[in-house]
Image 1 (cartoon, one colour):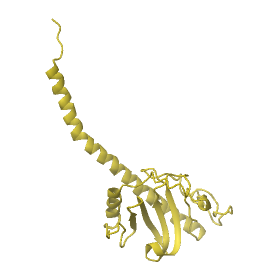
Image 2 (tube, rainbow, N blue to C red; image 1 turned 60 degrees about the horizontal axis):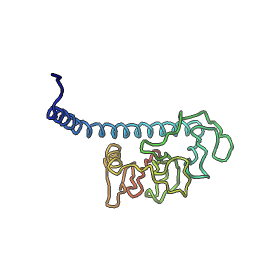
Image 3 (tube, one colour; image 1 turned 135 degrees about the vertical axis):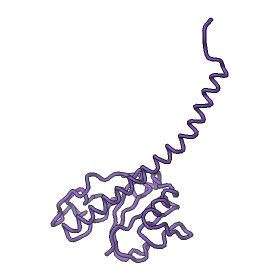
Image 4 (spheres, rainbow, N blue to C red; image 1 turned 90 degrees about the vertical axis):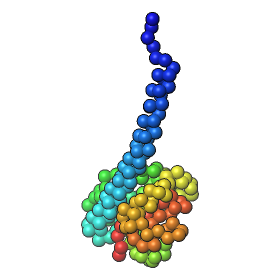
Length: 191
């Protein structure tokens, strides 16, 4: 007589596997999200260090860079170009090895501004986790790289305590969330 598994034995084994999967899966997804957050934090630190080095070498901040805006396609962190095709006196880069999209699929933007009305009239430089995929164009409204709201709040809490007001914007500190668009903004330098 041939020995084989009975239907009951197969059902028990499948049930055990299902229970184990139900226990392990949530922890695996949490670990993936934690790794994405760690990557963002590391990339923001790299950009901040690069911007400070650029400023020390040239006496100015890198020009605005945004991979979806035609007027700001030159990344002066990577190339000796002031954004208009001219070299930057004192430039000693590249200041970053490469410019990556953020882990949720959007792109990183860099912007310096005097009296930014959208940030309590502060003057400074920001890095943005934009919700549009790199090189999709300013009018595409791609919006496929949104940072999850829970992740935004977790990052804000890590950076400066998570002081959020009712409209999803940070009241004070160095991180602001635009929960409606899925974008996250970091103030890296004030001047």
